[in-house]
Length: 533
Image (cartoon, rainbow, N blue to C red; front, side):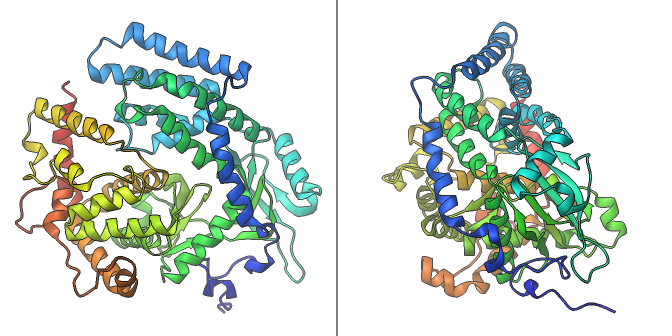
């Protein structure tokens, strides 16, 4: 007989029957969470300010490793063709990160999921960093758990696996089972995330070194996306600082679960954090299970509609951004899986994007003006998101980037023309003071993941049709909000499919569907031409 649905499901996107009930006002670790989050953010400028001299021993070690990497590249690959040169410096930087330890490996892991933001050679090299962090000993794990929970580990857990499920740069994850509560015959199966004992001190020391060294690297690394190392360090500091306190992550889980439920996105679920067993370094949560996101064969065998899974993911992600300004900031295959009933289970909320009201409204305008083909509106939205200086002249941007001219299909350009156009656009953007704010970086990273997910789960999906359908759904479902916040009435909203196609470099207007498989063929043409350099 089916048991009654857990009462917390009404307001949170949790599993139907949880091992405990989450009542936010009873979560002991959430008291003062707003002050804690604000304090953490205020520390970032202090960590990234360029000091007279950072910790000297660590500076010597980091400087030596990076100097060796750059020196080896200068002697061997620098004068080779562009592709070989980029591959050489990428490989050497990855080796240096592995030797320098968890902070640098974490930076490498962020780069590895940034296809489209960083050069392909760098992304591919740093993918090897995902499994390069050895696990802490169980004695260290036990010590952290007992110190933070204030009691012996055996008093809390009936069973605690000594070997972790996964070991990452900041923490490692163990499966465990709690002692049964009164009236229960068995304890709840849980996952325990345990922070590495000295990682907080390591990160803070390394951020000081990074901030001191970054200005010296400007113009010295032949990787366009890293043309501004100080800005990259600032972005990295913003993303990693909140990851060092698991109370913030647990609150992220609750906030995203509440937002998702309010939006009616019941195709997405989040694990319940434990109401009491959460500290700065320990996070106990409900254990979920399912299929790996790339396990297409198993999902199809289970009768799961992978097209619908993708639609659910795209809608939930976009709606969360537009309506609540809140979204999971680090989507990748290791942070989500598909449950047996076809729902998306999200994990690891250490990186969660939170927009201010101004940012969310700008993002809302960016999505709507993009669907409507309003170029000036899109540039204004980018400016308000912080990608351009506040006093930027929008007409100058349009002229400099030639957005007022007839679009040229990039697949029709020669290798020299493609390279020249890319260099022209980059030079223009840098001249305008363009930068990549944290919100946009996380959003683009997630788009890159969704792009790869389409390639795996639904390569024949009609991209233009799906984007148009999603845009229309958002406009009609949230019409009152659109009218009140950005002055666009649902009756005035029309999807410009030509503009959507133009955004991916397709200039024809025949109205035909464009599948991911067809789009990938176009990308391959462009990539092959660029690789001839």
